[in-house]
Image (cartoon, rainbow, N blue to C red):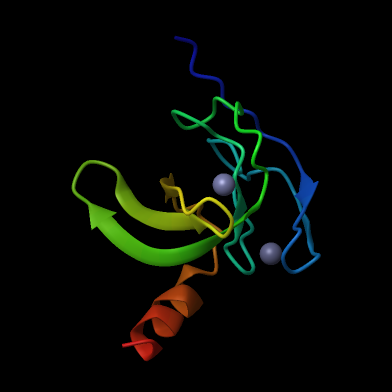
Length: 103
Ligand SMILES: [Zn+2]
Ligand SMILES: [Zn+2]
């Protein structure tokens, strides 16, 4: 199976900000401002095979030994959960505060 990584700029459908291409390495798949994502991947990251295309909300953040910081996104429509790597310019400290305030 091909592992396709697309680095592209897009407009965030959640906060409306324009997101530039990823500054470094991987594909940009979520908004660095509100950290929302879009349900584009079906079976594995980067396949872009989903027909859902709904907004995915960041619900959790985790530190994986081999991958570093990961954001868990949950689709608002079909409830699918996908783990995504944190980008270097992500505003993820705000997300941690937000998650902490929910508990
Ligand atoms: Zn956004
Ligand atoms: Zn979905």
